[in-house]
Image (cartoon, rainbow, N blue to C red; front, side, top):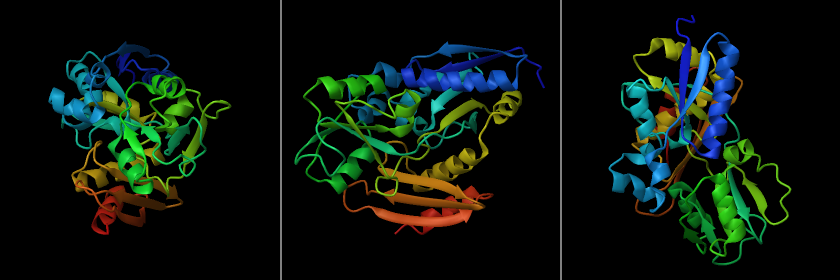
Length: 308
């Protein structure tokens, strides 16, 4: 099928984004050894606007949801400057423009959240009124629900920057990051004597839809590139992220909505669980369902309709 000689991969320039791009490029080269694979680094609005809280970036820039981390990549896709954009899937808005599609995903890493502490072990070990840094509304709402005494502080920057801010600054007692990013960048497993990494069970602290997954976005009219990326796609991960993103779509929710949802496959069964916080505060609603692996859309619909 190699009727093209070159594939241009688009990526952000953060340490984590580059690791994810490298993994994608390696799979493409292995699957298509006769095609040259090159990289184009693109700076996004989210990378540029570190002067305001992440939840405010979209408002200040007129960009929908966490499109702040994909807008410029999609512009390059549309212009034909790149053939595929590599994303942390949890950064991709629930609904994207119809002329783009998430055609494939790589095998998922860990889906859990990690609490990194300076002088405590775990969420229960944090002192009263401890200051916890996060840029995620979902993480902040769950922390407030589990520990109402905590002070939530905005935290921006890439993964190494955030870890360094915790280690070197008195502004934070702990921070929260995704397990997948920490693993991919070599922070986990950790032998750090100054920082304690506590991986929170997903049944206790619900992750974001798509967390841990690397999504590959291409143009909807580029059937050749769609076929290419599907050759390196991980089937079970694609089933799970399809269900999770469909659940968000039904909720009319996005990356900044305080929703935790995760799924797992056991045999022919797709297990899904969700925790949804009301926009104006209050107790979350919970739901868990078991659906079929071959129909993730139906499982998402059942999860949505049984939310209580």
